[in-house]
Length: 191
Image (cartoon, rainbow, N blue to C red; front, side, top):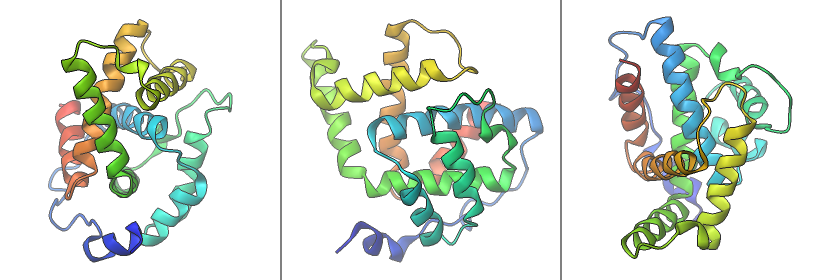
């Protein structure tokens, strides 16, 4: 059975996580900055293309125009000086969260394997980047991070720490109700 068919019985919705108090514009901007890092981690591990995003929007019954904005964001070869996420409304941000978590859930096995490998290498005091999976992930994350004009300047060591944290976060976001966890993390991050 395909991952999409498996997930169709439990498509995420916001019914269990109502928007009782919308974030302020400043909070929304901070949330989008954090969400940008979650997307960056996802894209660093999973080969996300516009067809995957479009399929997720169709499966989740989300307006497909959103997939164009995501594609614009994820095209890291452009010289765009602005982050397309900054123009997202609260509703678009919540839809994007559903898409991210849906794609992460489809790739949960890969995410779990990467996190397990990270834990094993760390426990053995070995450099996780020496493995192919994590080496590629860290290299992609660092390249993507450094290409973004709106990121804070960090050392290579700090970028690896950030990438490790976001990888672990992805595991939580790939689980059932991951969208609620990500939304609550974003609210917490912005407060």
